[in-house]
Amino acid sequence: MSENATAATQDHANPVLRVGMLRGNPNYIWKPQNTSCAMMYTAKQFDIELFLFRPEDVDLETRTINGMFLVGNEKVRKRVPFPPIIENSILNERLYGNILNELEKECILIRHPLTTTKLRTYNTLLKDGRFTSLLIPTEIYGSCEQIVSALDKHESIVLKPASGGRGSGVRRLSRQGELYFVTENNVTTSYSKTELAAFLKVIEDRKVTYLWQPFVVSRTKNGNPFDVRIHARRGKEGKFQIHLFPRIGNAKGIVSNISTGGYSMDIDVFLRDEFGDDHKKIKQDLLTLGSQFPEYYQSFHKPVIFDVGMDVGIQSDNGGYNLKLFEVNTYIDGPFFEIEDAITHFEYFRYLYETQKRQKDA
Image (tube, rainbow, N blue to C red; front, side, top):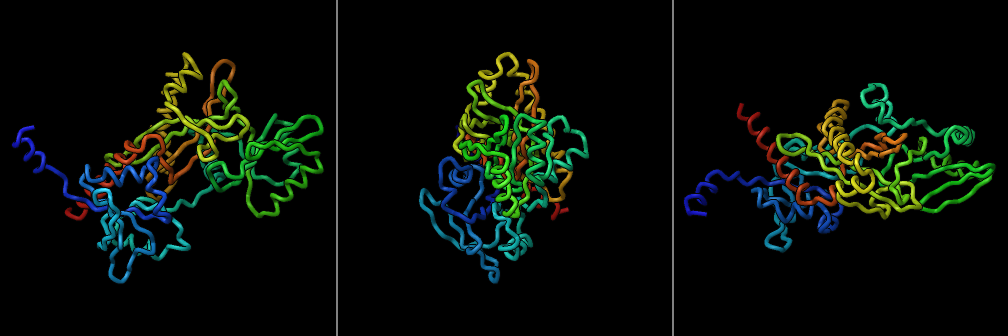
């Protein structure tokens, strides 16, 4: 590159933008497979000065933060004023509401709590009707007799907490004759009806709302449970950027969540191996869903949603297939494409900053 070309590039460079990352566990982000780690090491390429901080690093009196910066390959503490933008993973208003409210007076927080649950999301989508073909019938758990009746109608059902994630508390129930089988954490236990009632009574005593659904068979040729995570994150121009990755679980398990010991692979290789000639059509259907659903989901919520994760099963149906929506999540991780996910973050930070600047100048 010539000297003139270098000068021209510098003349048009973006001004340095300082962004804070608010975390409860600062050690977590330094894992190489974490998007936040990729962000710390690549931010300067986008003229972004990124730093990490915890709630206890915030001084509300001086309106400053004792942040951790990456200088070279060393972690260095510096006290700085509140930055224009904060990428916050902490949303607990009960513990940190005062700090979050004070930060938001001067900073843009990219995440806000959503007052929703799995059941509320299901009911909203069911009532609206646009994506009903994706929905799995869902009911609130009420009694052992309800479960027994459900197993009379369905070969197998899933019982799971109305709140929570990462596959926690999910159980699969089935029936063979007079015996009932419960699979939890890859272990299956058989019960008589009386023993099943006792088992379910323990769940009832926990004062946790549970949901049940017919079990959707979304399994590989080898019998492993799988779903496809449609990962949507706002990036350039504030638009959702879409990534697809399959999540394959243990053959003895119920869910395919990576945190329960599952794994992933290239989406094209996975679909081609599992669905043969249909792989291109299935991928296009997944991409179409990814391009439509996040903004549709946003329409039901007032705060701007930064990230949406759709967990989609693919169910065989008379030689064809159906897509089924297992869950909708927000505040999601971006494993397996950390650099691309980091770039998406940076493009969104720039979009927010420039949008706010234009509004102030208007």
